[in-house]
Image (cartoon, rainbow, N blue to C red; front, side, top):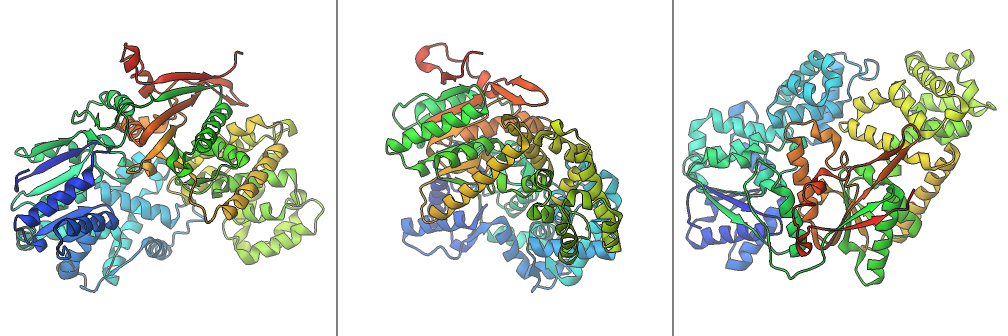
Length: 640
C-alpha cells in the first residue's frame, strides 16, 4: 500500500483485519512518520492496546505517543484542551449512564412530570431515546415515530425534558458519553482554526470496524482527515449489523462516493473456516444488492459440509443440539469450543431447559438465564398467586410493580394479607383499601383490576398462555414494559414465546413446578461450575460478532425467526438480517449445524408449519453437483 491518500480496506470475516491495521501503523512509523502524528480510532480500548502492543513488538519501539483508543476516548482528549470554546470548563466531568438517568429524573421532577402516575417512560428509556436521536442525527419526533410510536403522544413533554437536560449539563459543566462525540464534532465544524491545527497534526487517521460507525463518528474522521485525506478505514460491509444502536451502513458503502480517488483493497483470504462453510457464506451474501462483492477463500483443507437439520418441533431441536454436543464432548471436544447462536434471546429457552436437565454446563452471552429475567418472573408471579394465594414472594414481586408502593407500604400490605386465609379474596375487601396510603390507592386499584381480569377467566382457560395474553392486552403490563425498558418489544416476544412453550405442560401448576426445579438446578450448577471455564456458549448472533468456535449450532433457522419478522419492517431490514446470517455462519471453524423446527405448537393456534429461513431456501438449489451442494439435509421427525 502507498503511504498517502484515502484507503478502504474491506476485510472479510476471518481475514486478519487486526494484522492489517497493526502492520499499517508499523509501516508508517518505519517510514518516518512521528508517533504523535498518527490517530487510531477503534471500538474498544482493548483493541487499540492490542494493536499498539503488537506494533511495539514488531518494531521494538515505544508507541505511547500515538493517539489510539475509542472514538469517545479520542473526543475526550481533544475536548480537555478545547471545551472552553463551547462554554464548558476544561475540567468538565463525564457522567456515566446512571448519572444521566438521575439528571433526567431531576429534569422530570422540575417539569412536574410524575412518570408513575402519568404512564410516562422512565428516565432510563428517555436517556436511550435522547442518545439514539443524537447518534442517528434524527429529531426526537422522527425517532418516536419509527422506534417508540407508543410514546408519540408525549412528544412535547419528552422534548421539554431533552431541552432541560441539555441546559442542566451545560450549567453543571458535565458531558455524557454521547456529548463527547457531538461536542467534538461541533468543535471541528465551528472552529476552522482548530480543525486546521488538528488535521495538520494527525497526518494519518486510521479507523477500525468502520462498518459500525454512526454519522457523528464518520464526520469526525472525515473532518480530522480533511487537510491531507490520509484516511485508512478497515471494515466489512457484510458484517454491518448494528443499525439498532445507531450504526449507519451508508458510511462504508458510500465511502468511494465521498472519496472518489480512494484505493480499495479486499482481504478475501479466510484463515478460520473450512471451504465448505465459506461456500455457504459466499452463496448467501451474494443475494444482497448493497455490497462490495467479494468472495472468501479458504486456506484450510476440505472439511465436513454444513448440515441443515429439520427437527419435528422445538423440543426435538433442543434434544438434537444437546445430544450432538454430548457426543462431541465425549469425543474429546472441549465444551468452550462449541457455541449455540440464535437471533433473539427467547430462542434459547427450550435449549436452556434441556442443557440443565442433562447437566451440560453453559455460559449465557445474550443476557441472564431466560427464566430468571425480570419480566418472566413478573408474569409468573401472577400465575403463582392463582395456584397458591399465600405465596408471599409472588405477592411481594407483583405489588411492588405498582406506583407508589415502596418497601414500607409493601410491608404494611403484606402484614394484612398474610393474616387472611385467602389473600386473593382479601385484596378486594373495602377494609384492605382503607389501610393503603392515599398516594398508593390508584396503583392498588390497577392491581385489583389486573387480578380480577385473570380471575374472570374460566378455570379451564387459566393457562400460562392465556394469562400472558390477558396481562399484555387487557391490563397495563404492556405499558409497564414500554415505560420501564428500552427493549420492550423483545421482552414482549419473550413472553409470547413463554406462553407458546407452556402448551406442552398439562396445566399451569406443572409448568410452574418445572420452572422452579430448573431454576434451582441451574443455580446449583452455577455454584459447582463456578471455577470451571469449559462451558458451551449460548449467544445471540450480535454478541458473537468477532468471535469464533470450532463447532457452531445456529438454531431457529425458520422464516420469521431468522430473518426476524419485526426486523423485516425496518428500511434495509432484509439485507441486514442476511448479513446477520452471514456473521453467524462465519463464526464456525470446523462444523456448522443449521437447525429449525418443522412444526411449532401453541394452544390457541394448534400446530403451525414453519418455513425454513429464506436465507437457506435461496442457497439450497444453487449447486447442482452433489459435491458442491452448500449443505447436507437431515430430518429428525416422525410420521404423523
